[in-house]
Image 1 (cartoon, rainbow, N blue to C red):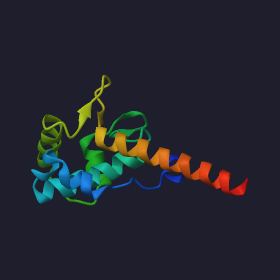
Image 2: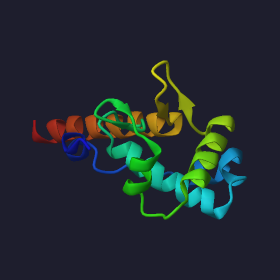
Image 3: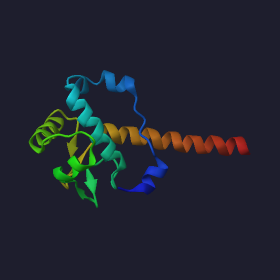
Image 4: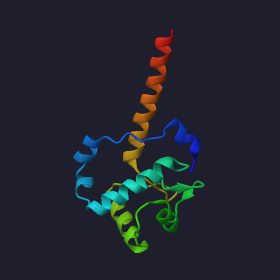
Length: 126
């Protein structure tokens, strides 16, 4: 995991309203939602933020299952991830790497708030 990125954005802004309004997410089971949240955390802390990436390569399912705090059989995890892709919760890039558009949107919001906060601090100091 890339800890430098964690220092810059140590959290992802979880907007409950957006989460609750997203019909694709509402239709997930409780177990799938928990699995999704765990994967989002891995993606957020990944060396390529918002991607299931380790050393700039796709994370293998066995490594993913070691990184999350939910015990899931490999076959079940593969089925759920496939569902996330089919439901357009996750996407796959040209390098066959799974990523989350939802997290990419949140990363943009976080970076904007961080930049705005620094600018506001400069304005106060001047």
